[in-house]
Image 1: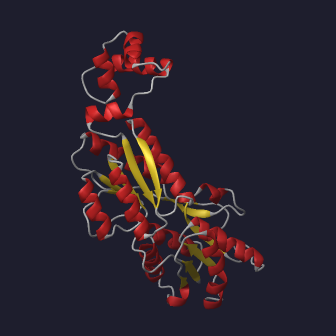
Image 2: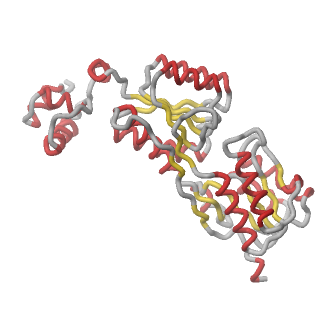
Image 3: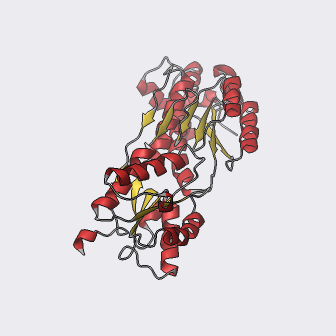
Length: 338
C-alpha cells in the first residue's frame, strides 16, 4: 500500500498541514522541520499527488524545454544543468525536439500550453514573432539559454559569441599564424553564425591580417559532417592556410577527420581550434584546443532563474553573460617554435 501524507506526518511527528506546506513549497516552518519531513518522505517512499498539489498551488510543477536538436552534444550538457535546477526546485521537465522547424516549434508550444507548464526554457534558436505571441498567451515565465532576442525583452543566459570567436582567432594569431580560415555556421543564424563570423573577421583585421570571403565556408548546421565536408572546400579557397577556427567542436573534429584523409597532419601542418568544449573535445586525437562554454552551468543557471520566477521569488530576471575560457590542448602548434 502506498504511503500517504498522514503516514509522513506521523513518521516526522508533525501535522499534516506542515507536510503539505513543505511538499508544496509554501512558507511557515523551520529548516529542522523541513529536514525531518524530507527524511520521512525518503524513508517511506512517499510520492506527492501531482494533481492535488496543482489544485493547491495552481501549478503543474512542470517546465517545458525546447531544443532545436536534442541529440546534439551541446544540448545534452545544457539539459543536464536544466534538469538539476528543476529537480532541486521540485519541478519535472518536458523536453521538446524542434529540429529548428518553425511549424514543429509552434506545435510543441501549443502542446506545452495544453499541458499547462509553469514555465519555458527556450534554447539555441532565434525567437520568432509567432513564438513570442504564444509565450504571451501562456502567461508563464520564459528564459532563453544559449540564445538571445534583439526583438523581445526576454532574460537570457549565454556566452558572448562575438568575444569567444574573437579570442579564439586571436589565440591562433598569437601562435604565429597569418593564413587563418574559418568553418562557420549560417549567415542567416543571428545567434551563433553571424557573431562568430564577425568575431573571426574583426580579430584578423585588428592584427592587420588579410580577410576575404575566401577565408570562410558557411554551413546550415554545426555538426561533424559539416566540418568534414567544409575543409576540402576551404583548402581550395585558401591553399596557404596554416590554422583553422571552427564554429563548433563537432565541426572542428570533422575537419580533423578530413585532414587525416587528405594526409594533412594536425597540428604540424594545420592547427585547429574549436568552440564549445564538449566532452568529446578531450577524447579525440589530437585533443582539441577550444573555446569552453560552461554549458552545464548555463543550463543550471537558466533553470534556477526560471524556478525563482515561477515561485515569485523574483519579479524580473537579469540576463547573464557566462564566462568563457580557451582550453589549450594539442591541436594548435606555435609557429614561433619552428
